[in-house]
Structures are given as structure tokens and as C-alpha cells.
Image 1 (cartoon, rainbow, N blue to C red):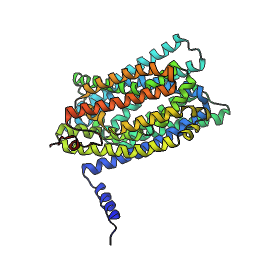
Image 2 (image 1 turned 120 degrees about the horizontal axis):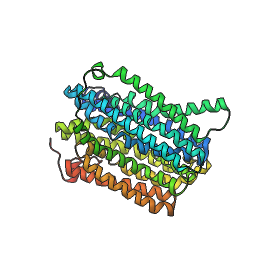
Image 3 (image 1 turned 180 degrees about the vertical axis):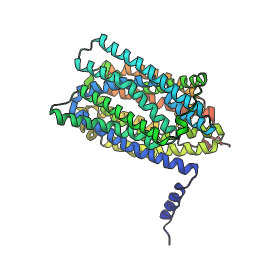
Image 4 (image 1 turned 45 degrees about the horizontal axis):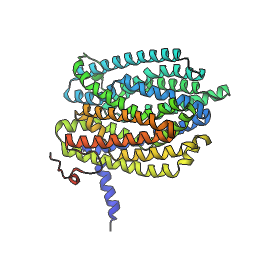
Length: 455
């Protein structure tokens, strides 16, 4: 007699190997999760290596400067990477290849021009600020060069991702970039036989970014059809700008929401405390990192299904993504909480002081995971303006909370401020998305809420 469990998995495996949209998306999402789980492990391992090499103060200097780069990167990208996930599939499907090429050229020129200008301002401000620590000043000079290169790397990755080349788009950024940093630092130590500094770490970051750009450039030439890369360009700048402005606000507010805590600790406390907090934050991000990349994989599909009016299919997909997010986040949450002290000791004995902050952040990220792809649902269903407004208000609230709680409660105050803000953002986004579209991106189906989704 056949085992029903074995029979079920055999049928499910055969179904996943089929050509249906569900099978294709499941395979691509599975690839994204695998790549990003490996990437998360590599990234955390490199962070542990850096923390043990540098110590809390130098690690804090490096992380503090890199946080500023991440925040400024969002301003320089102008939401162009997110818009790429919308425009490139649309133009490719409709055969508007001249517009596709025009958008690629226009977005590159805009992003590189703005990032170059902001990098120059960053160098100027660093010079006139005359930072008390010469090492920190050198780190910020190098970080200014990382900025435009990081922007270009992200744009190149989004173009490959828009055409569903998940491995080419993600592996260089998620796995190779931190791995190259570790290799470069290892070679530096081997050749110089002396301790590394925060300046050395930032220089390794710069070199790694250049190497990954070269890999993605080769990937674009290798996998994208020749007719996409060459031909006449046409431009629809007014329409692109109309879509990009709300998206840059969304990306900017989202990054501000997730980076305000590190900046607040660095400015209101000190770089040593910032180093401890960054370690806790990096560990907690392991919960949401695979989920974020699964969401980015399905973003073009959300836009297409919503445009085509296939609401039932979209609802089914979003519910499954939400349950998948919880399935990933829940065991990781329990594991991080139970092993929080041990995980932080991997960074060094001094980093164990971040245990309470790690637990607070972990619980907050678990609650956010239950809302699945609500951010992309809003952005890809032409409700990006409302999404930007919600994120803006939430980011402002987070800044106020950090200013109030960090001086009084230290890094635990930063963790509490960020967790409360993230959960509040998720709850409001779910409510607005449900009201506007009739679709829920959470683990709760519309039927349980008293509304039936119709095709």
C-alpha cells in the first residue's frame, strides 16, 4: 500500500516541475530563498570576522560610515531600481524595446549623475567637519567612492532581476560581495602581517564592489537578448518621473525606517555602542533577508496580475507568500532568541551587551513577516503615493522615538523604537491595501475578513 505522505510529495514535486505560473514562481522563489539564505550566512560570517578583527570601536566606525552610504544610496537610486521591475517586464511584453532601452540609458545617467554629486558633497562635508578621529575621516572618504559604485551595482542587478535571471542578479550582490571583502582582508593580513583597521575594511568593500560590477556587466551581456541591448532609444521621461518620485520616497523612507536606529546610536551615544548595536541588527536581519528577496522576485508578477485583473490568482499567490514568510521567520526567530547570547559572543565578548536589543528586534521582524508582500502590493498596484505617505509618517515617528528613547535606554531604546515603527507601518499598510484593492497580503485570507475576492 502506498504511503499517502510520499504520494503527496511525489505529486507536488511533479507539479513544481511543470510549466504553470505557480510552478515557475515557486521554483524562482525557491532559488531566491536558497541564494539569500547562503548570502545571509556569508554576510553574517563576514560581519563576525570583521567584528573580531576590528573590535567594537573600529567595527562601529566602519558600520556607521556604511550605514550612511546605504541611506544615501537610496536617495541616489531615486527608486529607479524598483521602477525597473515594473517598466522592463511591461516594455518587453508589449514589444516596446526602444522605450526599454531608453529607460535603461536614462536611469543610468540620472543615478550616476546624482550619486557622483552626492559623493562629492560627502567628501566636502567630511573635510570641513574635521572629524575628531583621523581614521573615521579616512573611512568616510573611501565610503564616498563606494556610494556611486554601489548605486550602479544595484541598478545592474535590478535589470537582470526584471527578466527573471535570479542567480545572475543576486549571487554577485548577496554572496560574492561580502565574500570578496573577507578574501581581500585575509590577503591583506597575510601580506602585511599586521592588524586591519576600519579604513582597510572600507577599502576592501570598495574593491569588492568594483569586482561585482564587472561580474554583473558580463552577466547582462551574456544572458539578455541582443535586441534589448542595441537599437534606437525613445524616452517617456514625464511618465517615468511621475512613477519614480513616489517610489524614491518609498525606498528612502523604508531605508530611513531601518537605518535611523544605527545613526541615532552613533550620533547620540558613540561608535563603540554603534558597533554592538550593528552586530545585533545584522543577526536579526537574518529573519527577513530571504523574505525580502522572495518579494522582489514576485514584484513583476504582482504588477502583471493586477494589471490583467487576475485578482484571485494574485490573492492566492500573496497568501502563500505570507505563509511562506512565517514558515521561514518563526523557527529562525526562536533559534535567534534561544541562542542570542551565543550568537553575539561570536562577534566578540564585548558584543554580548546587545542581547536585549537583539531579542527586541527579532520579535519585531517576526511580526512584520506575517504581512508578506504588502509593500510591493501597494507599489505595484498604482497605490505608491499612499505607500510613500505611510512610510514617511512612520519614519518620522521612528526618528522622534529614537531621539526620546536612545538617550534614556541606550541601544535597547533604539531597538524598541525601530520595532514599534516597523510593526505600526506593516499594520497600517495592510489595512490601506485591503481597503484600496480588496486584497490582503497577510496570512489571513479575505474570506475570514468577511469579503470574497472575485475575478
